[in-house]
Image (cartoon, rainbow, N blue to C red; front, top):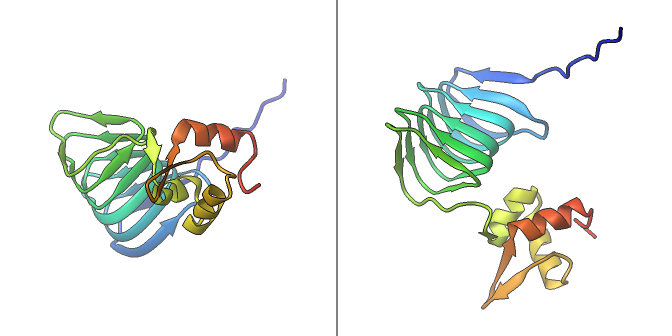
Amino acid sequence: MAFKKRPEEKILDVDAAMQGTLSFKDPVNLRINGKFEGTLDAKGVLTIGPTANVTADIVGDSIIVEGKIRGKITAKVSLELLPGCVIDGENNPTRLIVSEGAILNGKCQKLGDILNPDELARYLEVEINSILEWANQGKIPAVKQGNDWRFERKAIDSWVAAGKIGK
């Protein structure tokens, strides 16, 4: 009988005060319990623990918040706010789950409908100049509204799935 080896789960638990940029290319379960200031770009599950105090712009897949965050949050899969958490800032989740007792202050707009070039650059993890160049050359599904480009997330997802990114 053959046994398949389960992929090793990558877990990072941070209890210290940190400042700077954390960026992960591979999925990881990241839990912040201390103080963090800067920029977070996480794949996998990001948990902001109940004792955490975070001042950051955050882009992640699944984000679970028990502590305090001040800044912009972009959640590509889901943003879950648990009782006792406090969020101050702009939130752009694909899916939002708010428990009773969670506090959400600021603007909240569902990610998934229409993205601007900056949001799309973060979503695709490419430079904004590449997004604008592709849009101007007609290489990416885009609509121009006045002087601004807009991108429908479903069309972008199909474009990426078809392997057309960067071509």
